Image (cartoon, rainbow, N blue to C red):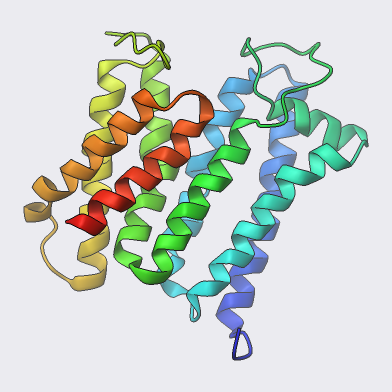
Length: 236
């Protein structure tokens, strides 16, 4: 960076670091109380929406990468450290065939949190050049995708996609509508224009997100959603 960091950038980075520690502690506490790891993992992304909302406050948007770096450290630390806290955190965030499996000794290292950090990184990269789109995609990552996953949990009207048979029609409809609304609101924040007329255009980005979520296998569909939305919004 070419100039010294401003106090607001340092304060926000510190808040992210403290908040990440609290998320990790809460995840371990819930796991030790036998809360399903699937429930823990779905509850994490919405907590970071609070940070994403203040992205426009950064004096130098490049400092957002410091926050992404803090999150990335919590992808690596559970793999490198062997103390009981980090062991339980690794198990709480691990991807496993069963939502509740407390006997898992070697969790798969690519747990959902790693995909979430990668997806948020794509949104942060777009935010550097087109902030109104990056903000909308980041909010979609934190709010719309988890909300769609929660609806899928009820199993109403499953769509039977080969890559994700658990996904449902209500979940995909919610993703499309929420992504369109969040992206329209983000454009409104930066340009001051009414967000309602933008819904038709941004709904195309929502449809792209829905297709990526359905067709890309495994947790890779999360970053695919952000990438698809970024391409569509850029073309629009």
